Image 1: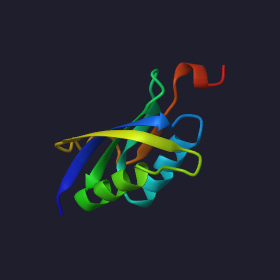
Image 2: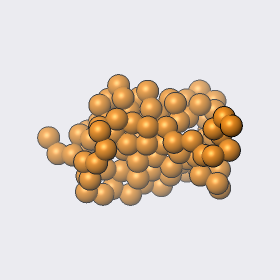
Image 3: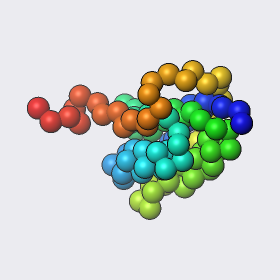
Length: 100
């Protein structure tokens, strides 16, 4: 089994619809590591790493996303796996999203 890493940028109605939590549940279920964060331009940035077939399946599912999301465009870059972190998928919050 070969491992790959994908950097994914999703453009459309992808913030405020539970996409990061949905992606985290899906990635965890599939045994993938990485993170998801909202970008200042309104896009969603996801990095995911794991078994090649699982990464491609994850990417295919992200093109639809959760029920209220409307993905208009997907940009993907494949990279060599870095095998960093502890093998978990993290939802990254910006400072304005965190409680004070």
